[in-house]
Length: 284
Image 1 (cartoon, rainbow, N blue to C red):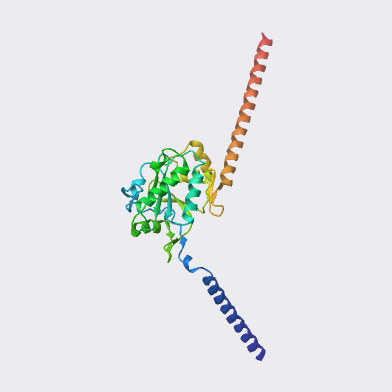
Image 2 (spheres, helix red, strand yellow; image 1 turned 90 degrees about the vertical axis):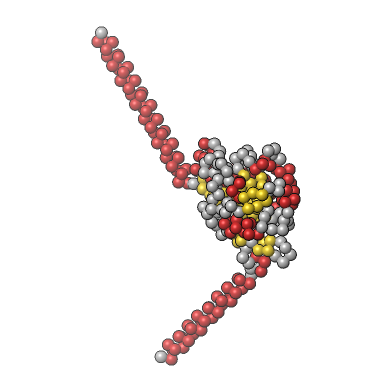
């Protein structure tokens, strides 16, 4: 009985130590997150609707609503950040425009680009200067009509940020801590795809825009290529779908067999006709 009690005490002590260690580890983990990054994240809301009635000022000083950029069949590439951002926003936009250089679609024709500032103190002049700097680097004549840098009140920008799950935090020095991402939006204003990071491959941007457009832009070949791919969040890009490739392989094999059989039957029929013709000639 004494040994049993001793073992029980030891077991309880070990459990208490484990619980204490786990609590300390959790506390250490929590303490490991810098204060300025707490509450900074992106929570995906795929297929959720954007607040299209949110009001902003365009980079030319025109009063607009988000709905003004969702007309017709064009998808929208959306970016959230702020124009005075010292680094990350520039890297995201640089990556987006750099990747778009690799595709032959034009903003304003096949798709729209909308960049919304979450800083309510930013001016139209700053937004206009930011747009012009990117257009100069982009070097695509006519793309200005499809690129929009919007400013507005905190209420309006936060309504869009909340819709896409973009969680940011203002720091004591006036800068904003935030994550790096762009968002592909359908022509109806629904969230189609999240793309993370600061570098975006042209092929991924093309397929993401095609996916967001629900097949309304691009060629039949573009749609076929998209059908063969699926977005992989871990790879941060589109990868081939093995099942669909196997399906295509199966169809090709089936058609090849059918073609081979057709040729074989045609040859056999010709042989029979030749033999019948020879027999008839011999009889005459």
